[in-house]
Length: 566
Image (tube, rainbow, N blue to C red; front, side, top):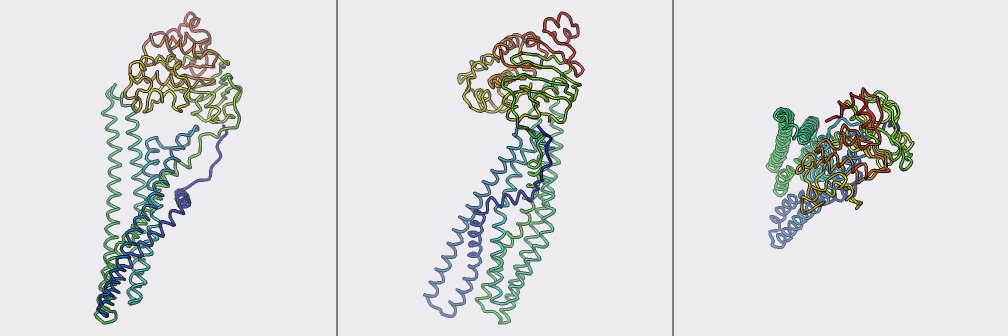
């Protein structure tokens, strides 16, 4: 894997442009339908004014019938255009939000981690709330255009009655938008900060859920809940600030819109009183003054939603723009190859060097648990190869030159805290649903008692994070999943720390038998696993200090005996 090149940044504005470009067809259709809706809405008070004008002049039932029919057509157009227009836009909005959720999730699920300074809980918020608010731009633009259509039509109709009325609507609209555009910037900044604080609260509660059992074990749950309460309180205060800003914005918009409608009505009344417009034109003007309150309200709210969508898009860009920790190479390892660690310097590792031959079962007894964790991280490619000294080779090829897919296919590192997913025992052992034979893995991991305990067998339901399983059952389930993968090289990190000594002894024998002829490395202090290994490497002070069988080391190395004896 090569050092990643600096990728061209994809700011929030680019994300919004991508969303608009992908939905251009739906937006055009939605804009046409919503524009028709607004035009029909605007036509209603115009038609009402014409009805009054002609009915007073003609005073005939025929003219009245035609007028009523015209109003019915307008009302039908209003109803159908709104119904189908919003259906088109909301479908596009929902689909676009789904696309961004999937894209953000895909970034978190890629084999190579991204260099993003966000916790999983924060990324969850980005993939949900921010994705939804970003997709709102699909509705915002058509509604903005359709509202503008209504205001323009109203201004033109009023100008036909008297030019001053039309100019008053245009000037008033420009003034309102100028004031609200300034206020919307503060909404965008406040919303972005609120989303960040909510995300931090989500990350904190996710951490609490993961560590709830150990927290209860040593009585640290109250302190942890106190820390979460503080983070959540910060999020609450910011939400109140956002609500206050939004309230001020909405109140100002409503007051300005009402002031414009009042000004139009009073001006029309004055012009009618002066005899410069007719009674029908007065009815039309007053009706339009009341009607334009709605499109003005919608039009004035759009800057706020644009800024909110922009703020959410900027947060999504933090994830989508983050470069990968490493750029995979193109090569593949030789099948069934060896594992070689050559002079690796990382964390507590100070030049670790050893080789596990193809088909060999080797155990590493790390006197310092941190050293085992650092070695597991390097082998799992959780640490970019260019960030540590030395090299790791799989099948004779440097891990930095291999594609990440090839690494995952040939080398599996099973962590000591392997995650358990909501589903069944079967889906946890075989997540891909490939239908591979899993019975041997179940037997080797001594999970048979768990399967036999439940009538559903392997289809027994497992709750999120294995909440309905004991610690030992979760650990054995994770081990079964690793064994079922049947990779060329398998690395196990403390796979039996939560099981009793008898079960541990059986697991050690079963793993050695099942993995015979396959390259296996176990990082452990378990005497049973150490005894089952072909040879044991002692990792002390960041380097390999001894190498022999478990029994020979027990007989000749007092420090080793003290470290692994139970």
